[in-house]
View (spheres, rainbow, N blue to C red):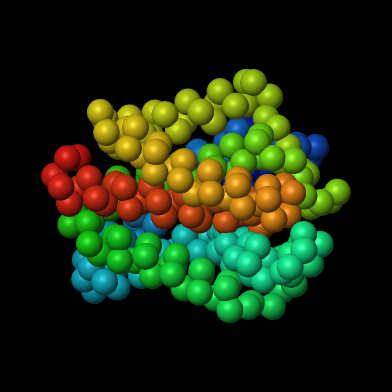
Length: 248
């Protein structure tokens, strides 16, 4: 495993992959979508085992919890902090202060509960087979990990420190690696319906770009984490809708 790929796995998951020296986060970010495929694969195995033993509802819960555990709730934490900060403060400074507060507020709790419940119900509603679950999980987690790369290219960091500054802009080569990974997965999953998945992914990214740009003047690590969670959910919903209409 290359140093940059190992660094991406270390940053986005809690999987033990050894130590990494002198690999910047911007270089590792090229492999974020591929790490998303790994997380999706782990969730798929968890879903398959639980579905055989317990049925569809427990399987969906286990699959979602597996992703939370393997990522250390990194993106869920970002979603909750972003919701608290963007809606809980009157000034940009106060919003950024709230986002750094480890306590969970009302907006964050509602956002977190809604996101997790929707992810579970999406799997229950559309994943009638291992292949269906694979499409939902793979597309959501791969495309979701590309969302922070787009946001960090569009918006400046909101702080002079933190993950929003560390990620920065990708080089042309690294951007191509990430884009190719996403496009391959989108085409494999959706075929001619690939634009539907890309459109679904664009909705939370554009929404966060507008909200974060207006309310805090840029991106933070929490906003980037929220973009992963919301894009994952939006794409999973799109795949589930296509499956239910027998279009995939």
